[in-house]
Amino acid sequence: MKKRSPLPILFVYVIVELLGYSLILPLLPYYAKTFGGTPLLIGLLGTSNAVAQIIGAPFIGRLSDRFGRRPLLILGISASLVAFVMLGLARSLTVILISRVFDGLLGGNIALAQAYITDVTDEKNRAKGLGIIGAAFGIGFIIGPAAGGLLSQWGYAVPAFTAAGLCVLNLIWVLLSLPESLTVERRAALAMRPRPPVTASALFQALRRPKVGPLLHTRLFYGLAFGLFQANFALFALYRLGLQSQSTGYILAYVGLLAVLVQGLAIGRLTARFAEKQLILAGVAVMAAALLVWGFVPNVFLLLVVLAPLALAGGTLNTVLNSLLTKSVAADEVGGTLGLAASLQSLSGVVAPVAGGLLIQEIGPWSLGVVGALIMAWLTSFVWRHVMLSHDTQAGG
Image 1 (cartoon, helix red, strand yellow):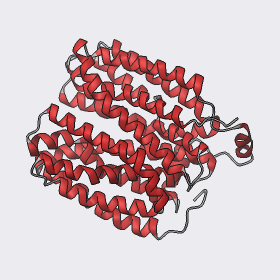
Image 2 (cartoon, helix red, strand yellow):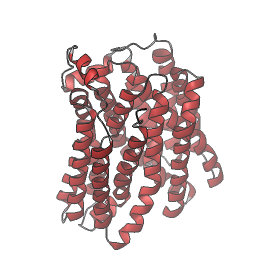
Image 3 (cartoon, rainbow, N blue to C red):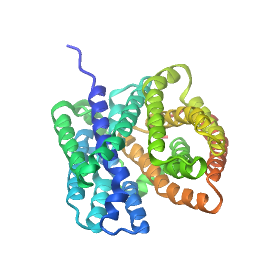
Image 4 (cartoon, helix red, strand yellow):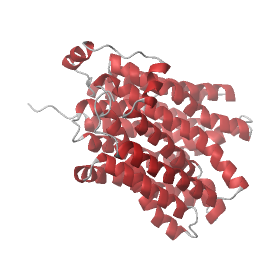
């Protein structure tokens, strides 16, 4: 009897996970404001979850290398459930802050789903499998914010409790449907190797390794440049094009749809035709050009046009960087390495909103595109020197 692929199960898991997260994300500032939150405190709430992920993601990933993906996925869903219930019951800013930090440290971790994909796919199909997870991510973000806005008319606590309900469904789904990806045979093989320590020093040594380091640096600087676009898009749309929240929401849904098409359909075909290193180089170069043009778009029509190559480059980089990372380390380091990549992504999520706000305030909205393009232009040179010209990836490099 043919064994059922776990990819559809993970696809549903990621959609539900992102639905819960994106239900409450756009409403947090309004929720906090009802408790007298100042703009500074609301900004801290927005970054607290990302800061906690910077700390938690690498360790959760490394623990999954040691104890298996399924137990850590269950822990993450359970932590998110507790955090959303706390958020719904919150009667102070302190409780809201604790709920966001708790969720960031232990909550549902998409890097774990990516590590699971690595366990159940071969190197040839790795990027295609990771692309499916990226597509699920996009679907969650298309539906979630709109649904959260609709539910908020009955109170800001309603989306939080709805997100908690989705966590319950996801927990049941994983418990009943998802087997452990690290099989008994795989565990026995890994037990023969010295286990990597679960320490900050061991994790961040990866940044200095000849194969993994350049890929992690690429993830960090790509995240910073793309974060200037992503985190500040609403402000850009307001100050550059005079768009209101409803129009901006429609455009962001369009971006989400593009991301789903790229990661769900295009990635498999691209990786079948081109080497992953080539796709990374093309992605950073296209991103540099697209960000520069984005900074100066004069109307919505041209904005929609330039968003297409931006989404193509971003979706390709998100998927292929993770795929190549998993092929550059030993099997018992995959979770920790993907967790570190997620941590670097969270770091860019902390820096980009503040940097973008300063750029808009001091220079103008067009500067977002220029600075992002300069970062990506430098990164194109970096990728050529340190990724394209490096030797073929080897486990443990």
